[in-house]
Image (cartoon, rainbow, N blue to C red; front, side):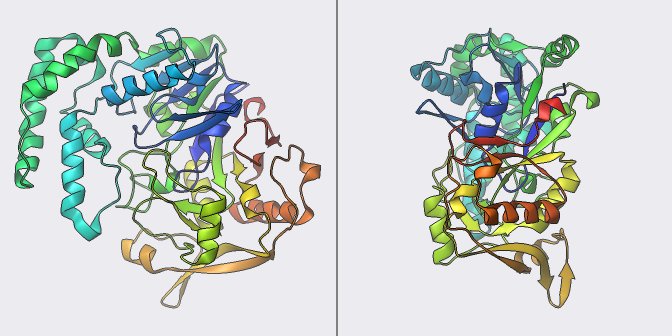
Length: 430
């Protein structure tokens, strides 16, 4: 058996929540390793819908250990609010089934203010952040100013670290014309919630080493998608962390040998939330139709997602950069009934052809997609649980995607329900 990392292969929102939930039945442990509460996962289990942002998807499953790794930036108030929300749905969250890395950095109220002011200043050039403080929190982490979970145990040190952090962040707020924050308005409420957060705190790297030696199957759950990676994504319209599978080792402390299979979650078409380049975006009635049928609205923000045809160039690039072993193709059923379907097989820009997406911000914004057109299918794929029940033309579409992205389909999802999944190859058995 092997440990598995689940990664989004596009711009996020590929359906990772359902796939992670489906795989968690085979796993003992589910680990979040990057991002913050700017990314959301939606799970539908026995008719109950769970919307998770910080909590790993395994939290809704009994007898599973959920872990938030050091690579995650944690808003303590958002975390406690989320725990309260899922508790109302019957999910019991205790230190027995949730552990948090003691060295995970915290998102503080000043980070939210800085984030929102920065977006306002950018105006038309805004990145499209959720305004929840994720970027500024990561910035403080890299600049060695961060307040971490372990700091909550020492009030004097906590005050000192907040003071240091405010020197920089208050300067930004004042430059933007916003009032500065004082230490006590951050420290006082933080000390109130500190005991609750600290009850989940542990050296996660040490715990994972123990679990690995015990032969436990570990599932690493990524947030967002590869094309939002701060290094390899459509920079600067990206998130503030690395979203690749390699981050699972850094963001949890398990070490390079701890992951054996990388599952890339891939939507059967393409979507994006927020600003940034999107070569296959459809701004016509077809794009609107895909968005409506696919219920394409952000889990966290509620913002409508931009929709477009499947971009094989982009996903192939993701496969190679991330070392994806197999993909889980989701939302195939949304394409039911389309007379023709297009797949992007290349780009062109000022007479130059590209079989990859160049790093240049200007070229990314200006490339034109080169499409290959296929016949669609009229039969329904919704809820199918066997490969033989799929329409022939739908199978042709899947096979063509495999050829173009140079990676095989391991799982196929045909509805939001966890049971509507076709297993082609079990990642844990690889």
